Image 1 (spheres, rainbow, N blue to C red):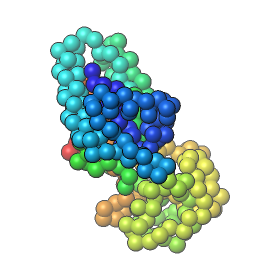
Image 2: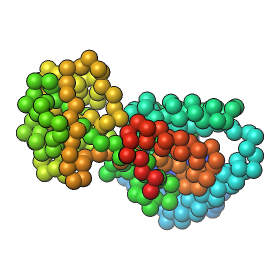
Image 3: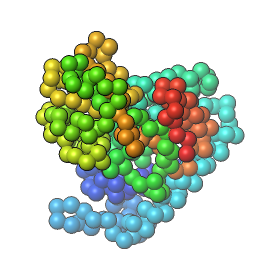
Image 4: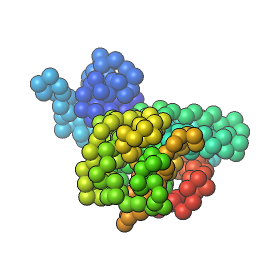
Amino acid sequence: MIDSRLRVLQMVAEHGTVTGAAQALHLTPSAVSYQLRQLGADVGVRLVTQQGRGIRLTNAARILLRHTEHLREQWELARAELATADAQHPGQLTLCGFSTAASRLLPPAAASLRQAHPGLSVRIIEAEPDRCFDLLLSEEADLALLVVTADSPPMTDHRFDQQPLLDDPLDLVVSRDHPLARQRHVTLADAAREPWIVGTPGTTYHQLVLAACLSAGFTPDIAHHADEWDTGTALVAHGFGVILVPRLARLREDSPVIRIPLRGEPAPARRITAVTRLGAREIPRLRHAVDIITAIASETLPGTADRS
């Protein structure tokens, strides 16, 4: 088993502070600092130095991090081989994902996994993408479904295996008496002069809408912030603006709004990926989980699954 203190060092590097790493690992800052000191003492190097009110990783720490990535990949590959050799003990699997994935994709996938692997314990955690990466690094989750944003680690990040899963198209939602409500399809630019309802700054939904509007050639006039689809559609229904809603997101059937598919080249969509720790994808139950989720996505949104 890999020394847990190496995981602490990785989280400090990820968050840049002892406090941030402690929050992600559910430890106290003093416990994180102590483990860093003990790890440094055991390998005979200094891992952090003070920099103002914060800390800075030393060159020795970065060398150790580079080797840690290789060690963790080999550990995951070893676990995959052991799981293949001992299929009679399915163990536990933890899946995490953003709200829509946690409600539309993960529950049916978990049910199918339990049916296919009697005795397998499946746990689901709803979390924003940045939290999902923390859950993977801290080994609190095995597989994450998340939306790609500008803050996502690059595909070349050696800590993760990121597999494109599906493109979830975005729809424009307007009130029933809106002039665009009679259209079968619209472009995003058709709503450029509308007041917009978007998520709270810093959220994935906020980034998604801004990126889509900017790619269509305009900056949205943000009139209101709403993080829940019910809140957003209620504002739309009363004439306070328009919103973008992913096709996977369910809206209340009795809501007096119209959902209009967007067209364009490319049509606005959010890319959803399945992410594991590097090497862990070869674990049979994880590989099966990705296959099941892909099949569910294909049934839910025909033609959108991407197994590249």
